[in-house]
Amino acid sequence: MAGLTLHPMKEIRVIVAGEHRAFVTELLDRVHASGYTIIGNISGKGHHGIREAHFMFSEQESLEMIVTVVPEEKVEPILAGLRPIFERYSGFTYVADVAVSRQEYFGKKSAKS
Image (cartoon, rainbow, N blue to C red; front, side, top):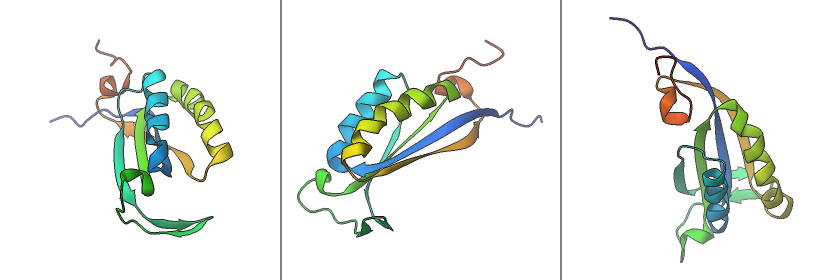
């Protein structure tokens, strides 16, 4: 049985207040990210201190993490699109190298196609 072939991609994680989720997801849709995962109601400690995860009155009150995996050429347009939100509001993003087995799911054609 042959092993899986892995293909290099980039994972982008964006942590923002829930009220900014639509800004981030609309940006990802505009740059044609093939998909994203939203993890809501998160907590942590950072530059602005401790942020507790507690669902108050709406999702807009809590922090959310939006995760996407994209080809490298989409990283810069996404980071440029996020710049305005981070100039005005707290939050952060980071980019990591990842490898995927089914690159066609992430906007790249496989070598067999």
